Image (cartoon, rainbow, N blue to C red):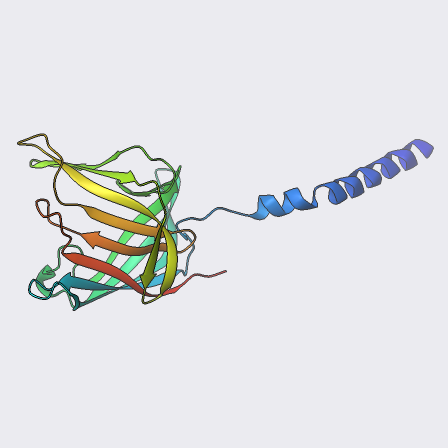
Length: 218
């Protein structure tokens, strides 16, 4: 009986000691990094703008995209989050940087700091500063790269500190880098905040995607 008593006493002291010593580590373990705000129910609303060729001001195109994470999906034994976009105002798909009208879905996940789609297409990098391949095409290959400094971006939805990825093309016929650039801005635990879109040969961007509302669940 004494042996059972001492064993029980030892275990009690051990667990009390662990509780006292590991309070901070337990709290740290409960903190889950979620740069891309991947959680069911999180939602964002974007408005698309186009540069006016005469005034150089950006005016609304009337295209609105509502995005919500609706569920998770298991693809190739990996958990993806399903982004459902409902787009209005993009009749005949006249705005190339926005989804076509109606409802579209894309499955995405965080893979070692990269936001990727189910075809392993990279959307954004928040850690790796090496250039990454987006797609290869007959006219050239598209690459993205994480730039060094954070940017403060002011949107209708608020002011955000963002990481910036730049997208460029290596042209097939010349092997040179394209004059045009696309830029994507994501904020930690908020997700996509802002985008700039250009044609391949135009160094000045033509379209913008702006975050106007969002809800991130606790």
